[in-house]
Length: 102
View (cartoon, rainbow, N blue to C red):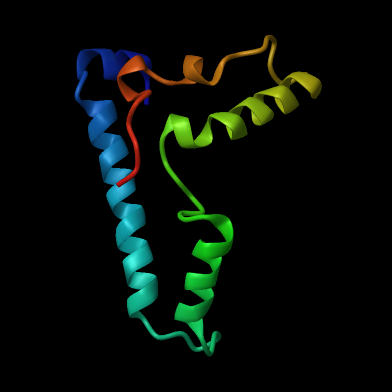
């Protein structure tokens, strides 16, 4: 989202976050609801996956992903893609820093 758009519509970043979170949740519900032709014990696999990885494999929100972003930014510095070390918070509007996935 362009910064100018977010600044002129301050509610928009949170609305977009919630829409993406809801879409992910609906996709996960659909995955459980539809039978699989390729996995005999699909639901068992999904349950095991959640247990092994400690919950949601794809959490949304800065707090859940800050360590991943720090690593990614470090790789960008190492490869010459980024000109300077950024803090993950610099990539997001302050109004989104505390948003968490439902």
